[in-house]
Length: 103
Image 1 (cartoon, rainbow, N blue to C red):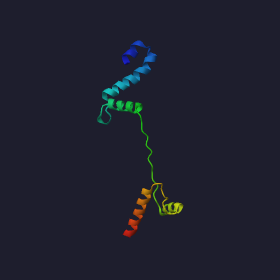
Image 2 (image 1 turned 30 degrees about the horizontal axis):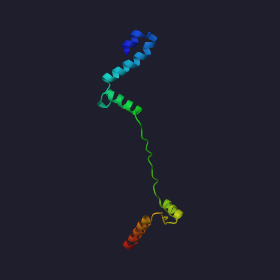
Image 3 (image 1 turned 120 degrees about the horizontal axis):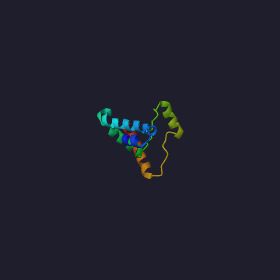
Image 4 (image 1 turned 45 degrees about the vertical axis):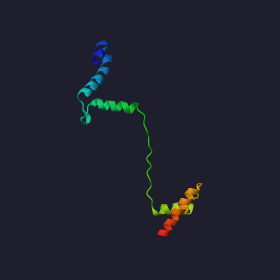
């Protein structure tokens, strides 16, 4: 690239092309970030730029304080609402009865 720019372009056009090309060639030959060849970093950058990304939302839970617990239970009366599924209602009732018998 440096040779072509130097021989076939005028100096004022070739100079801005020669510096980045020569710098990239020197980096490929001698620069070793983290002990690995520079080409691995170039490959990773290209894959990152052209690859698809998956953005995940990380939910941060608020710490539960006694005041928050009281507010939550006072909103719905402390009793869970009945669901459409009879099986869920039955399992909820069995869990409550088992917990009451253990105490």
